[in-house]
Image 1: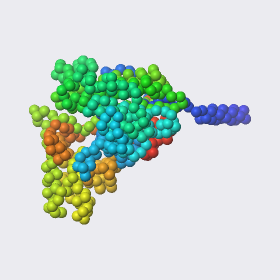
Image 2: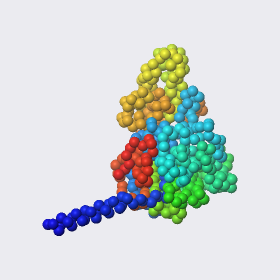
Image 3: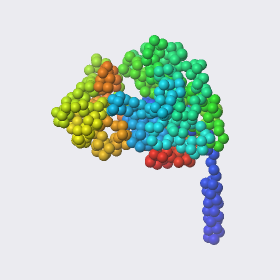
Image 4: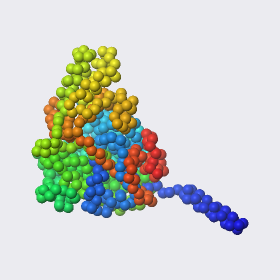
Length: 531
């Protein structure tokens, strides 16, 4: 018994010493962190098209690390707000970014959330900076942890997404200017990569657009679950010089993902990203899979499916380049998707699907007449933006009226209008009394920029915002209640392959990446990392 006791003690000591040596060892920092945002990536489409993917794109992410089947944003957020939430680990109410565009009730027009007159544009007349982002991002924290001797670059077609990806401490945020076709940036950042400036001079997008066309990558018959008539006539989209919308059309198509990948690879190669000794560099990119709205056919499944196949190939190209130049075994990759827009184009009239139009001008006029009957003559409605009515708060204050009471009266009146399902006041949202998931609505609302009244439409209705734009007509998204999954992936050296099928709060992604890197989380991230 004594021998066994001594043997047990000896084994315990050996185990303790081994444990101490492992914990005392300083693991080598990854050379590169790659963050990828994909606008409109749908989990069901990803599953449906898996048979058309190669081994090096989406399959590589699924087979080499953590798959989150459902990343939960709480409610729909546009690409700008979703990118900010992923990068900060904080909801809009904390990070300050509710959407790409907010409404200015005094100027009575929408403005970009990142607009900043103090910063000039590089290769663009637009003035943007990340100043509206109230908290730090995962890119900021990596830069701080490395003492600023590493580099952080972001590449996206959308300026608001690029700014969220670059954060406050990045070297450069790059985006496509849809007026010129140049790759642009802001003087807020200290750098404009030479390779990008050379691309603008030598091969600007505007000089190449009329030679491009979008056709299917594979025979349409190979796309799964398409009706026969859709496989007989392959689509073809072009971007002719005479079309004033051609740059907008291009950035809405999957061909823009080719440009993003090419610029990202140029930066990776020319600036030796991922090759700075002892630190972790950052390269963040953003892609789009949102439905193409410039086609003639409302049923655009062939275009959607082809966009997935094209993106899979671009991901493989990016990953292969990283593997050659840096090594994927020294790289952390995370990919998060933003929810697809909860709407669709109107079905053809021959299908007899119920349809209605909600005119914001008529609604505002009727609301103003109603409020005048109660409170006296005046201009009570300041505007409408993204499903929100803004009241003229200056007039209401000058008259000594209770703004909460006016909001309640207005909400009661609007809720009786045809096409409106529900109306919430900003007071009820902030107090957590609105909707079926009040905490979700509260966390995704920024009270400083929100409207006084938020409306939900009845499914099948379309908002015609002829209050903001007198020339507005139908042709936008028809409201649709449809749940979509937004998958996410994390691939890191030594990470076990695992799939989480239950919903995961998307705010956990940034803290999880920080935990893998062994650095602090962004300062607004309150959700713990995934263990």
